[in-house]
Image (tube, rainbow, N blue to C red; front, side):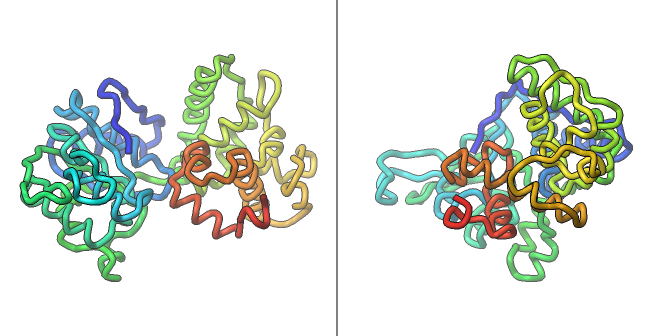
Length: 335
């Protein structure tokens, strides 16, 4: 859960036609209090779109509350959203308002709404229909004036067909549907994004921004960013930390484990560990090996704490669990 600073303004970086269309959609959505459903692949920046909608709306000076519906057990998610009264369960030592009440007059952003349980979906639907919440353990309802923005990387229409998502809730949320395009559909934005992230990490670490050569930028543009902007951001952070000197060139990309045409070249430097084991094969195989090595290294650095590691590498905890299963990573075999 996060409560945003009303004065903090996110950036929509890029000049491509896809980014301009997204910016237009965000601006149009911000002109009303209608509910918005933001869809798109993991890592495309759905949270940025949500914060922009709030920041450009008449509620901009009010609270923006964000909650990841996939990152909490169902019982805890319900308590976080609706609150509870003292004595409603064992550890309820005092009354506590839910996030829907905290966001009163402002906006609540329900990230990964497609992972919400059927029980919680029914309660959220009531809030959307009646404009009121009921704390756990209380029979009293509380009126709330809150704008709801939801996001998911799932196809909710397919989830409805499977019986995993309520159709009536879907239509309540999708008054204004906004699709955030994947990075592969806007490669011309990559140089601007790289420079944006490089400047950001330089400020964070109080260092001079590194120069990135045209060849390195071209290699980054040619790469397939399955993790989209989040993966690109992590790569730029890695480059900023790991590459010595003031300039990043195309051969340097391989030494960070980032798959690219340069990294696949025999002349490119190679990193140690698991990445060194890839002597040949496809770019996909190189990427998988490099990503696995990176995740194992980060997990070791953080004592195999899943929540802390997910936060450090800026990925949802649910996504990290999927990666652990995909690459068969465990503390027993990789610790």
